[in-house]
Amino acid sequence: MRSLPLRGRLSDVNRPALRDSLQRPLGALRLSVTDRCNLRCNYCMPEEEYTWLPRAGLLNFDELTRVARLFLELGVRRIRLTGGEPLLRRGLSELVRQLGALDGLDELAMTTNGVLLGSQAAQLFEAGLRRITVSLDTLSAERFQRLTRKNEHAQVLAGIEAACSAGLVVKLDTVLLRGVNEDEIAPLLAYAAHVGAELRFIEYMDVGGATRWEPTSVVSRTEILARVQEAFGTITPKDGRGAAPAETFSLANGTSFGVIASVTTPFCGACDRSRVTADGLWYTCLYATRGLDLKAQLRSGATDETLRALLEAAWTKRDDRGAEERKTLPHREALIPVSALRGDPHLEMHTRGG
Image (cartoon, rainbow, N blue to C red):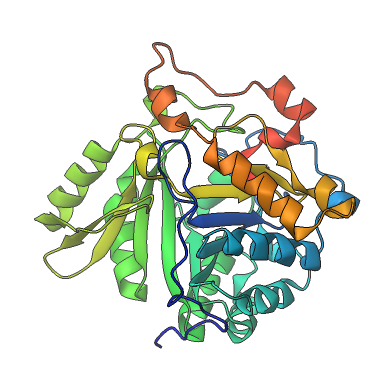
C-alpha cells in the first residue's frame, strides 16, 4: 500500500534550515514516550535492576505535541517515536493522531521491539503512522530468549506480519554481536526480503546502558559486507545517503539492506538528529551526558517564543561528535559505569531512545 501524505504538510514552504556550529541542519527529532521496556536485551539492558523515571514526571500527550510543533517550526521534518518500548505507553495512537496533524511534518515513524505490535499495527496506521522499525536480532526463539530474557519471539514475528498487512512501511534492525548472532546475517536478510522489509545491520554501540560492551564484540561493517557478499554475490552501494544513519546497498536480485556503522565508520559530520526523553530532557547527541530541561520550561509557563529561542540557541552552539571522538580513544571500553547510570537514568540508552 502506498504511503499517504500527512495532514498539514508544508513541504512547499521554504524555511531556512537552523544549523549548528558544524553547519549540520536540525532535521530529525527522536521523541521518547517512555523509559520502560518489556524486554531485557543484553546489549541495551543487561543489568538486573534499573532506576526508572517517575511516571508523574513524563510529558503528557499535549506537552509532547507542543514540543514536536516547536521543533517543526525550527526546521525539523522527521519525527520518530521511541522508548524504551513506545507501545507500552497507553493510548499511543492518540499521540500519533495529534502529531500527524502538525504543520510541516514530512515523516512520522516509530521504533519498537514488536512484542505488542500485532494488536496495535492497524490502529497505528489508521491514526496516521506510516513507517515503523522493528528490532529483530535473531530468527531463533531459543536465542531470542537468551538475548532478551523473555519468551516472546513469536509475538515479534506476528507483529512484523501485522505491520506489513496494515500497510506500514517496515524496516528491521539487527544489532550484531560477535559469537552471538553474526551467523544469522544471511538468514535474516532472506527473511526480510520474504516479508518485504528492508533490513539494517547495526554495529554494537558503546552507548549509555551498554555496560558489557567490549571492542571484540563488535561485528564491523567490513565483515558484515563480506558475509553478505559471500552469501548473495555482488553488492552495489546506493547513492543519496544524506543524513540517514544507514548506508544502503542492493543485491543482484533487487533486495536492499543497510549498515549502521557508528563504531567503525561514524557519520557525525552528517548527523541532523536530536532526542527528547519522555520527561522532557533534550539531548543533541546520543553520547551527550547533559541535556536541556524542556519540561521545567513547559510547566513554568514559558511562551513558545521563549522555548524556540532556547532551542535555537542550543542547536546553533552544538558541536557534538560523540561517535567520532569515541573512535579516537586509545583504550575504548563501556561509556558509563553502572553506578553512574543508577544515579542518573537519563544516561541510559533506553531512556533517551536510539
